[in-house]
Image (cartoon, rainbow, N blue to C red; front, side, top):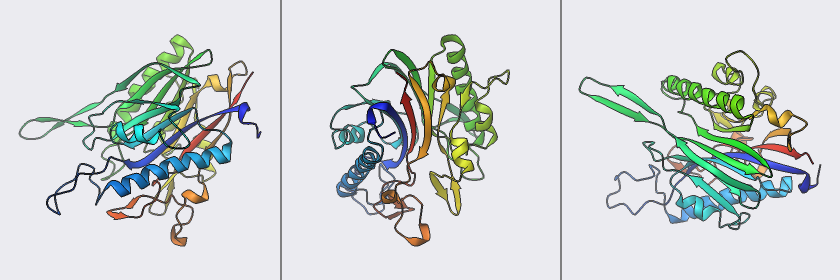
Length: 318
């Protein structure tokens, strides 16, 4: 399985706050656009180089670059435009990106190999949540879900990139994740039943594969299995993409429609991976096997991300 011409890759990577550098602050305690501590041009350029290096490592390990790359935790299009100019992308990748209404300006995006993928259409799916207090009604915003209809060879694929509301503060965001997943489940079910086209859903779900909302997502309303989540097996085998204190987590997942398991389809599922290359891992023995992150709280470490990328390997069925 060493021949790069026999396979295609799809990746997802939570890049941990890929933001443009902040303008110099007038006062030391002034809030910054990024919300990061001393996020300057030098740190930004190092971050871009580090993210590009991740994909260079994927290229060396897999003998191929992903034809589709879902990205989360990017702020605006500019960092992506600068990223795809670097090795190993070399301006051969296009960008699908929309500014979301997220309060921190954090977006998701899709990078694609322009020699293999044609974008048919794309749109952001936005969610607003009403927040009532004693004075008036407010709306709470979250990150958009990016929906793209793409063409590979002669087939249409529907790609969703998401970063669901985070687990924090006794998981007050769980109802939001549930609402978004229910809405996406309806959209995906309708797509599959009406078109038969392939679906790829990748992202940071802020839920593990064995949690109820994710485990149930792969079934339609009649309990037919319409999707496959290979991340479930990875999680059983303790392959983690991120960590919270001592707990290993696999919030980063890629869910596929049954097309990729059908022998007549031009791309067949081979395997799912957490790309936990040793160079992306923390050097500190106390945190061995964990991602080497850019920040730990407000402390700058200069690493890649607090998540490992995930990969899906597909075999060309010619």
